[in-house]
Length: 159
Image (cartoon, rainbow, N blue to C red; front, side, top):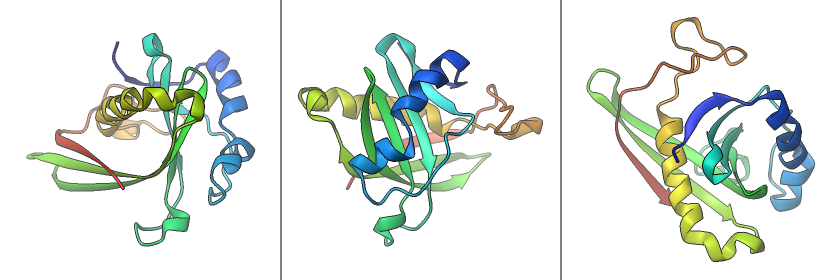
């Protein structure tokens, strides 16, 4: 029971793309930017049926309408939120990673599991933070799944 960064299999991409698409996310948050279903790498915990997918985006914390989006799929339900990453430090000494979660939308069917959703987000971002897909010749299309950032600390703040 742990999250792992991985490429999404063809079989998983098929069901996930039916859940995570512009229309479904726009129904939850009207500010979402247009995005294409990527070739997708996700941070997955198959045992708990939980999957973190970054949808990208732009803007700054002051530009609330353009913040990057991400989703946590939990039991095939979408938890949608904006996320802003702040990193400080350096690779040798270690990086302090802070993630600000804005506009967390938990579907009614999962609301009674709010504490679990929060815990899953902490665990998923802990693994996601360490992912270096383009290290040593990796690309987003063919990511390096073994390379890891030197993360000293991770903090998640809910705004």
